[in-house]
Amino acid sequence: MGYRVVVAGATGNVGREMLNILAERQFPVDEIAVLASRKSLGTECSFGDKTVKTKDLDTFDFTGWDMALFAVGSEATKKYAPVAAKAGCIVIDNSSLYRYDPEVPLIVPECNPDDIEMYSNKNIIANPNCSTAQMVVALKPLHDRAKIKRVVVSTYQSVSGSGKEAIDELWNQTKGKYVPGREVAAKVYPKEIAFNVIPHIDVFLEDGSTKEEWKMVQETKKIVDPAIEVSATCVRVPVFVGHSESINIEFEEFLDEAEARDILRESPGILVVDKREAGGYITPIECVGEYATYISRIRQDKTVKNGINLWCVSDNLRKGAALNAVQIAELLGRRVLKKG
Image (cartoon, rainbow, N blue to C red; front, top):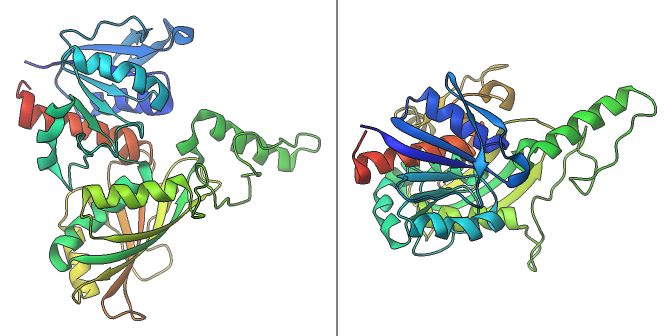
């Protein structure tokens, strides 16, 4: 016996990935509904070897459906998630709307699976920010061993994190560099992204940080440990898919790099590729379409008493969004609904 599953926002990048991953992982689906805004009504979406047409999110009746994976942004989520939850359909939300609500669990299954029990507070479960999700998968097993005091992270985030329009902007600006007269002005980003990097993701806050950086701080505390101090600098780079992170970790006690490497090799969701030679590490282009969070460049930081540096790469549309949502659905099935 399987589940009746809804995917809201099925025509977007993340929604389509949710459908792909549900099929790839053979999630036990008895019936699926794909929802979109009225302007996309009737658009065909692939689910395994089936083709399903979108229904109108505005008029959909969630009664009798087990769970809904939302990838519609905060404004639409604010309107429709409570409707689904009230109808008895458990919402797994990819937006930022509920991440910081103390009554809503923020889940990365490799890190804090027991928090799933909090779902019943509002019938809603939050999916973390893409940059946070891959980082905490690496932090949690190391924290369990040596207790992390402080993290300094610099991100190198792909344009797919901003949606299809950003992908198109990078592509068109890149082509424009080689075709005279085809220069494309920046619209999605405040500056040109092709052949450039932009140290600005989301809005600026009063203290000079950006909202993306604030998210990484708050979500790491909620998922792993509120005592961890996090300093983040988030940068958009001209990469289509795949986020990278340079992470410096300071521990309360000494952790040898060899032991850290062994811990990460044995940890769920992680693949260590760490050869000290040319090409002995993972880059974003190699992680596209993969489930794993890849860790490379593990080394001692000799500038502090108990420090480790590492390089972390993951497909942001997968682990950073759709895959984590499906993993939450799997966890929900095992721990709560117990049908599949």
